[in-house]
Length: 454
Image 1: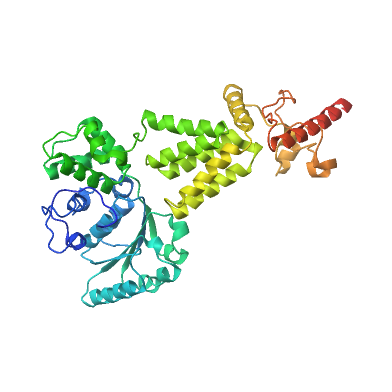
Image 2: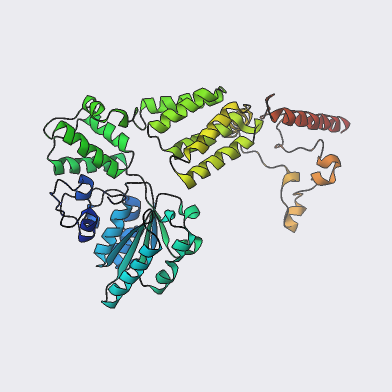
């Protein structure tokens, strides 16, 4: 089956879609998966991707202009990458050639080029669609370049991976990247209603519908396949409730809904286990969330937050490690990339802890919010013009690099009227902040000596 889709009406799919479903497949053929039967035939039947397909939006303009352009469609599974490519071929009456980079190779590329030449000879446009284009190596991707440049065909690549990392810069420069988003819950509700009508089934009860949508997590194909299987098991005339879903799907069904109370309880348990320096518990809650179907990229963002909030300057390497883990996941995806995130979880848990910067930041924000707008002291102001210099901007400023130890002892940097001994950041006696505290103590002692002499 094709990589992904939007919801659509229960009607005969276009010729390009039928080719993927099997020769002669009918919309009412029970052997054709529901997801394929509901593939849209027209742009207006597409559900979701309003940022790309709304009035005046990039892809809508491309369809209406009659001028297709080479593009990379980047987004998670089940959001419509294949569907958009097929709709574009139908809209422009173009010959549609699909290549799977997972299964294909140089031979398939050569055949696509020959097919495009045949189409060109009969005066027909050609669209070459490469599914999972990031799976092609550099030389395979380069093979498309001369033909894209000559206009032999319009190239459309689909990828679930960041094209900045996975698509050659030469090919990337010749294609517009369009980012597709996971389908919203509202879009998934609309798709579920279409699926219910297409199957002639009883609509699932609201709570069961919410569970199905949470399980699909923005993936239209997963929603349709799951719903179709449940209806087959339970029958079309039987109302589907949560208990029936649990019995039908078992371990497949997520243990919590995205955005539900259990979801937030579990991420809270992960965060608190890291903060509590318990690597085993942290790893347990991390795997629970992965097993529950949480987007690993969401977990990567939360780990970055933990590194800044709970480890901070006690171990600055923690932030870099979480960023590296997030980048590694973007390159490898699941399941391979999850190991990098797991390593970051364990590292954060065993790292020395400090929320000193976090507390200092909150304290300064609170002060600035309630305090007046204090002017910058004259000696700290920039003086790029003669007028500013005549107004004493920058006068008596002490350049730290010219001072002993590159430190201007006794210099004032806070606004006038604020106590120079004001403290927001107080290092904790753990990790690197032990050394930071020692250094600050030495510098403050120098300040006191200098002010005493003044």
